Image 1 (cartoon, rainbow, N blue to C red):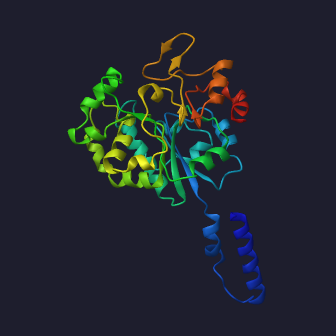
Image 2: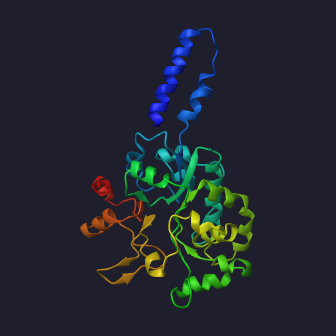
Image 3: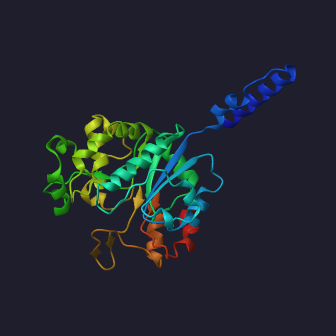
Amino acid sequence: MYKDVLIFTILILTLFLLINPKKNLPIKNIFEGFLNRDKIAFIFLTIDDVNHPIIWKGFFKNNEDKYNIYVHPKNPENVTSFFKNHIIDNLIPTKWGDVSLVDATNLLISRALKNKSNKKIILVSNSCIPIKKFSYIYNIVLEDDKSWLNFYKPDYVQGSKEHLRRMDMIEPKFKKSAYINEQWMILSRKHAELLEKNNKLIKYFRKPTLIPDELYYITMLHYLDKNVRKNLKFDIVSRRNYLKHEYITYAKWYDDRTYKWQTKHPFEYTTMEKHDILKIKNSKALFARKFSPESDIKKYWKYIIEQ
């Protein structure tokens, strides 16, 4: 449909110019609305460089008119790949579990919102890779105006001691709206604008050991938008399903062969094994982590994204 309209417009303009060769038409402005298609903003919150830039370069190839990239590295001097050209101007010091991660993410969101063609904003880390083709992600993410978040409500029936501890730290006026969310998310432009408009509320989350990057966004959306559930791709899940990380960014927190759970960080892949490759390939998620810079995942990536 888009191509048909564009071709028809070009034919009409060509005919008009042939009939009126001396007319001075603002051709650039006329075509701008057609060429400036909806885009996805990929915002990278990193420590150094992205671990697997070759995979990402292959993912983005031939889709330059459909995305924008924004990077906030902790150590910008260590970014040497093509991502170096996408580092945002305003950088702040960050550290794990600190409110600075929310501040840095908000800077990325703010920068992405400056481009009106960015309709969705996807947060990823340096250890993430895409596990679906670009066309699949582009189409499924932009098919509606909903945000993607993986979240649950900790209570004494379902909830780790750590999550319950954080819930107890939240200011009373936010408690009814409070949830735990996976850090990696996809925001609609509408929700991103709502969060940016109310970003001063972050002051209530500047508490040591709160680890706000895992609760701030979903809590704020519930607090600011009473009808937020209608605008979320996925409803609230149980803690059991939350831990599967099957919607947005797959991560291996539990090893079903050793029966062991990871605590602060998910399992980091270096040498890929067949059962892990198959789990990633069969995941419903769009991305996966955590891949070390030395991981041999690039040998299997094309197999993973082929459906």
